[in-house]
Length: 117
Image (cartoon, rainbow, N blue to C red):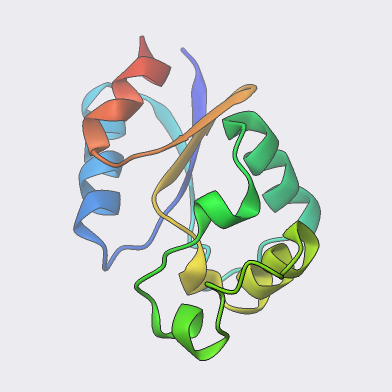
């Protein structure tokens, strides 16, 4: 059985549904409450690499922090975007599920079935 990590926000229905799918499949899951526990820059860079995404692709564009920091401005570097996500973890799209060298966003939650099988 594979082990999984989920960057989880219990207030998010998609995050709760994703965690439920993992539990229903008897997966060994480490739950990371990323809004309560700071994410290290190297961890975020690793996640982005596993998903083959740019930092901007992982931003939640509807969050107030996105607007307050004018993150639609394309002049910000990837490094600057990562720093904003570390300072304001609500900006990070959720839920992120990791298994080995693969990671994906559980939107919709059923997408994680690809990691389970």
